[in-house]
Image (cartoon, rainbow, N blue to C red):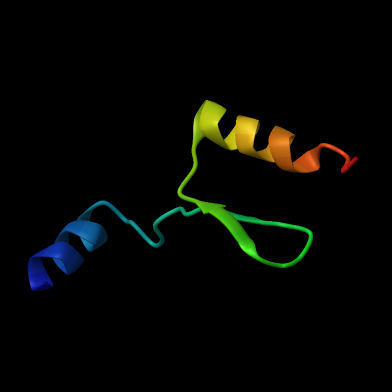
Length: 50
């Protein structure tokens, strides 16, 4: 793992981005979404309940 730390330092990586979509009931709905997938998931979960 030392090589990974050297590479992170060389490229000044301080964090790895992550997304977590949490529902209104505080449960995890989705993880790791990006781009259009994230947009669509948020749209779906913002729709009012019937």
